[in-house]
Length: 384
Ligand SMILES: *Cc1c(COP(=O)(O)O)cnc(C)c1O
Image 1: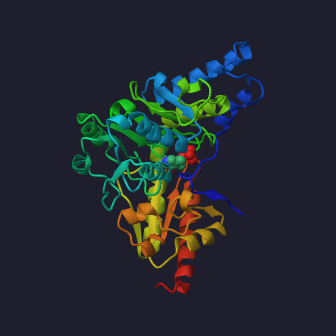
Image 2: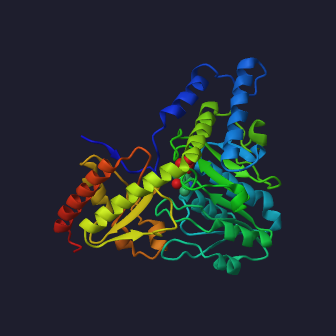
Image 3: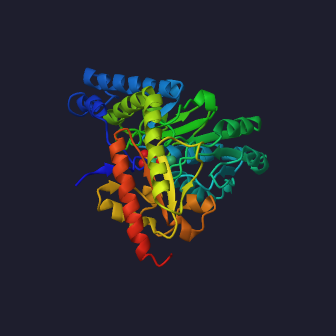
């Protein structure tokens, strides 16, 4: 059977070039970068070379890059680390209700620990209004965390405006840029953010490797105690193959960004117009323009997204309902309910997330399969 992978917002295949770049650091140059002999020092050079590469991809200083185990850890280190290290200045934090769980659940935990968290409203496209930021911030606000691009609906947030407003009041800004990196140009200089999270496995790199960018002068408390690695902010022997994979994946993703984004958005438009013209009562969730090129969240009225997902799986197509992280929970997506869908309607959503390996021939097959499966399921649906 064919295999068509349309869940690239959940994770991606490692590119052959990335695997090739990593391989020597698994088998030959395995020394500990803290060791003084040459095999260790070769690892150290790879680590620092990768740091330079990651920094330059987001227009940051290499000193500001902290390697982590991925997006979740970067988000935790940024938010908890900042809250703990700066709580003497205030205990009020701001975020949005459509953040990834790696951000939202950190805030929920901080609430239990006595921090106060305010959630900015989003409109029906999932956009935060910078004007709302003005109203929500207080003298004791220390941090705002807003994602750059949403992982379920692809909406791109007005980070630059939010950052400008926050900085007028001396408030730090973190952004989870996991879904934006490699899809739109991401520059910490341009955005003005103080901290930014990214991960390798959403951009054709290995799972379990990410980075947090931190502006000079931003104080963080480490999440772990240990050795002196990553300026004590992230102790533990460095994952050299992972870091080399991250740097390589990031270099390829940012280097080919314009051509890949144009190609992928053309495929996405083909998919959307195909589905919308063939099937009744389908609507787009999120913003039709202000979004990343690869994500299309479509709502199918009178259908269960999960039933459609399974029907597509039997045809060799991998898609998700809302996000991979909530696939095993019964709750409707917090993102879709935040943009105003009622819980029953929200369940009729499928997220298609395209990648660099998809072809127009695959998209045509998918359109046929979705039309076919939706037709069959709707005939059986008691919701109709
Ligand atoms: C995938 C994802 C994460 C988590 O990254 P991991 O590397 O899987 O821990 C965080 N935020 C967003 C927006 C994501 O899409």
